[in-house]
Length: 309
Image (cartoon, rainbow, N blue to C red):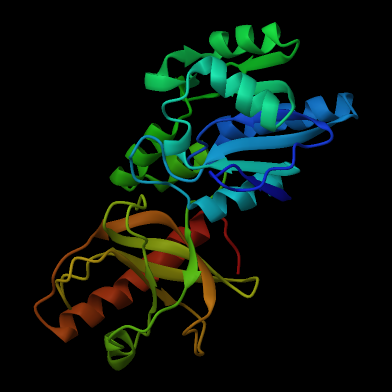
């Protein structure tokens, strides 16, 4: 997938082919977002002279905790079939009028033939424009627009706000249904205090990025993937109240059935079911007994979910 960076000062080559372009923030790239991108992909199948693009921002425009990183967002775009990702710092278009955004950016820089947006799309200075505004402006330039209706789950539209709320409740089943995939952490394993190894249950430690959305703090039955192989696991997400109080949010995962050095390697951890809240233990023996019990619980939960290893 080609990436076009519209950052000020960057050299832009106007695409030779016209674009079918899905536009939005795409935080989480949830099932509604995927439907939007898929509509642009379908358009390109019927219009062989167009290429599928996704226009998004380098930062979360809402200021809320981000569900996926910008880099992960781009990877998912490619998986959805996008040929081009167009990125821009939000600050550089925040104060543009709707007319300027359409004429100078979508048409002047990107040669967009058909724009795709969601039912609740807003753009322009102070969010002055919506999907109908976009359609009218595109039509004035001889271009077209598709406004997609909401994708509903449980009688309500799928949204990034609902996903963040589900994560905050530790409701991973709902969060994953809204996303259309498992929420998780794909990152490098960092050195910790090695307390788990000392007590007989080594953990893989991942730092949760500042500003990222995280599930409710506590212990989870998790799925861990290392070099393509799946392992059952139990993860603690939070600030480690029994061992330190620095306040950094981490994901510490005890991987069942794995032994080896993971430091510096990238692994994927998907917390699938909440077991208990995070809490402080009065002794190492009490902590060890609790972790061993949580391991058993995690294996039972994953088995009931039909996950085989």
